Length: 274
Image (cartoon, rainbow, N blue to C red):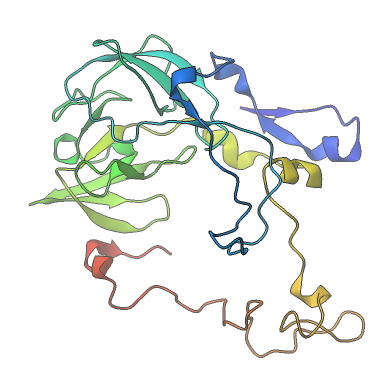
């Protein structure tokens, strides 16, 4: 659900946020917190390798369990919480052996729900099972690419993949991009759709809120000097001046394919995304 504000200022007029009324905890579980060093898009030499990053609000990293490798041990949902490092919500689960872990929360997950990770877990939202035991047509998230490697696919807010077919040692999955690809059917995935599907509808509303999120300003190439960008220079609003669109470093963009033609995983892709 999206929350809107009264237009007390020009920026407030268009600003929207996700309604966090579904969350049940104010403070995170201390034992599952750690601090990550801020890098501001810089590498180990201190040079910027990723532009437009830096200056965000202080935050602590939640140790989320993407593997969920405690097999056949039931767990109970204790809280649904906000995670500043990801768009989906997370859930604190208490296993029957007394251990607590953070996991990705599904869309309809509630406090008190019981979940389990098992080779052949019941078909119920939040449960985690091997792909070979999930019927065709079901939606899954937090999908492993390699057995025991932890979930890699469909981990952001509202994300899910649909099981299209089961064949021999492979499961065909339709990703949110529209791509259909094969995944080893022994790999694990969680049933359902991820929480916070309305996140995509939020409007940042003002420049300051981007800075809170760690997003620094982006300058248009046409506003630069010729030495700084292929689009730079000229009197007033000049046309691009180059035959093809280019990056700051003169690399051709806009329609040029960047995927390697002989990449090993090409054989896993049945249908490319549109």
